[in-house]
Length: 234
Image (cartoon, rainbow, N blue to C red; front, side, top):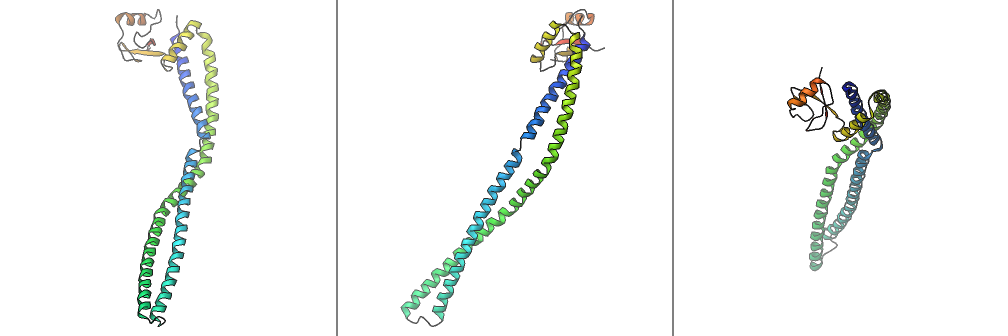
């Protein structure tokens, strides 16, 4: 006669083994995966490069503005210092002064736009630098926790495999073959409890004949719907 208790214990052990093995893979992936830090680092480099380029534009524009101001000062000196007296020269110099004044305004506006870009980037730069520092600070702590979890899981896996090896010899070869086959189909949930005449694996009702066989405990009963091995509580 099938020992449901041993089969149930085997199922529970295998479900725990599967869950722990998945967790072990997840931990190994966590230890290898540094993509979050790399992503933040790349974003920071891109932002710093962008800021460096804008800062370079600012310096070039400031130099250009300084040259324009020097030129305008020279024009004003010629215009109002008595150097230029000829009417035609005065008109030409005034035109040059007006052109240079307009160029100065345009350059000042350009410089303000550049400074505005820098002001907008600065908070993002501070934010991403802070995030990078936080991730780099947290990473060693997390890695230590993951490694500790790995050790514990490996110990738990060893204990579970020992328990499994103690159960398996007590089950017949045919039952183990059936168990392995059903385990693949049902994601490890080979057995299903019957409660109030309903299979808890697929939530469908059993026939009267199936219930009678199950209550008599004379043979293995499997659900006609989900194919699981059925059992009653108590």
